[in-house]
Image (cartoon, rainbow, N blue to C red; front, side, top):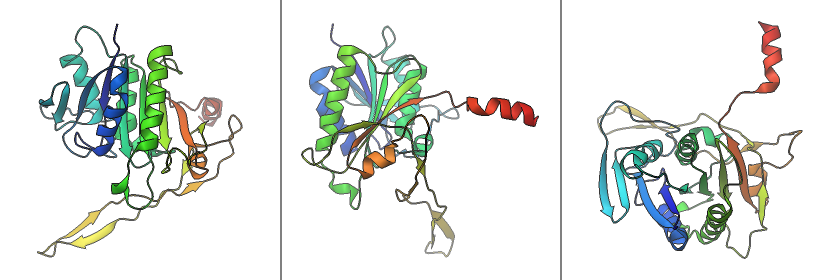
Length: 259
């Protein structure tokens, strides 16, 4: 029986990254695409609870959700499009820009994968790191990696179990130039809080939050010694298993004693 894959993203239904992902895995499965109408980067794992949402058919098995988040796209697809049988896999991306370290907590791309695994569906989130002009990406390496990982998942099952997904970041390199893949832990990003301040023609002040640099802090992890950020810096594809249980178990006793 042919497998079915649901594709979504957070850059919008007309993103070149989404179209590249669709092209890459089209030979592998029956595809259904449901993506946000508008750019939803950094929306996190949000659902729309205060207004109705509408599916708008763009093409056969291709919808935009007006005006939904990536999590909405997965959640509502199960109601409208997968009433009898869930998809075999949810694939989110290809995001334009990295989702490294704590970016995962902001990321709509990762959030779609989170929503999928909450519903018992395996998921992979793909992000294309870019440096300089992100508009000139060709996604050649990202498409190659997506094809490989999606094919393996459909044939052999997910590499991770319940409520876990793979967060994949691809370096900005041609396939001939990258060094391979590394299984990594999520690193520690170094975030600033700068924003651009401007004034509109009437003199009203407004702020614009821009894209942060890929600054990071080296970490020493006793369980694993290679972070996703280090992998990208060293020209590897980073594959990070992510789980939704955010409990820090090592701190439970400390907090009990503190109380």
